[in-house]
Length: 204
Length: 283
Image (cartoon, rainbow over all chains, first blue to last red):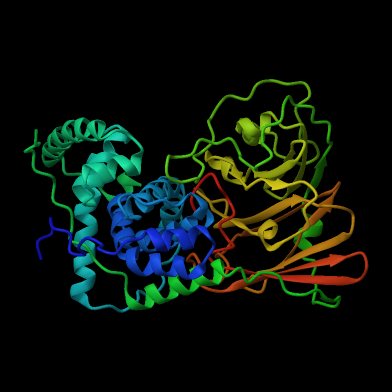
């Protein structure tokens, strides 16, 4: 698997009808959105938290929030994903404090017996998290508005137009922020190679 | 112009496990379908008043709040800034509290440290028309009212440098529902204990005589009711809730509300939906 290529593909369904039903308060519409987009939100959250476990909890929180603010749901060219990413962006930002506290708690309490999993799967997840911690640590040194643009376009696969819709900024703003943040992140990662000391604790 | 700068490699995508997907989906549907309140039942639910509650330092702060203007508008908007695509409130602005002779003051055994005024850092609190508070053990739960709305702020998390915990605003006079009874979970950053489970609010009238929480670990915590306000705080000094040392991923708490006419109304709170009542930070 090429780690730089998203594997989930782009959604091809038209979300307009589902979003209309969601706005009317239809729980089945929420379930449909979850079925279609949960994996994308899961990966989106991982790329903000660098933890698969936290991403799992955050995914649940995102769809709860989607239901709570369903009257504001909207699509862009028939796709609800930009709006979902907007919701997820705020959920992940608000989760930061809880994440820090939870990490501190875990450091003081005995570890429960680890759940058995396939060794290869576990190793893969640990490797993912190690790499993502480094990326997120560098990303967080950018201004927040640049972080959002870079991650939405480069990591989450949104088009410039979709990212602009998600962030409610002009497309030209997305382009300029993206260019600036790409160069800056590349430089930060190069600096980080000289000082590879980032740990999950540093990040959280 | 196309930017040719290569993007850093991010790990490949993964899918939610079937088990997790099924669990989360079921929780979402459960929540969205609004299964809520159980019918009132005859009084007689097991009730246990822990000695800890009796011994707890309970101080009710005088009303006296005459702060300036309405802060929580009629739509229940907290006034916190929201992102363009979501209403999740961001952390309130951290402004230094303005000295005010009419601001509520804490009495009795309530904490007198700099954290005592943590809730007053919330702009909404500083602009409230009325304020009350109940101190239970380590924390003070504060209630702020405008002309039409009220909201609760808990100070416990501010004791170790965090932000106070703000609950969603509610309309004054509304009857108790499951939404009002939801719990906020907060974990300690130091050795004060593992965590805190807190809830509180205004009472619509004087018909409620007791509110009792029974947690998944069997612990029963009575709420303190005084001056038209109630507050519940359970401090887990050993392990949170289910005794595993981990944030619980299942289980439920039951809440019994006793009324003056002898009836009891029961509510079921489920993790995680009803254990994340705060609106200004994560769970």
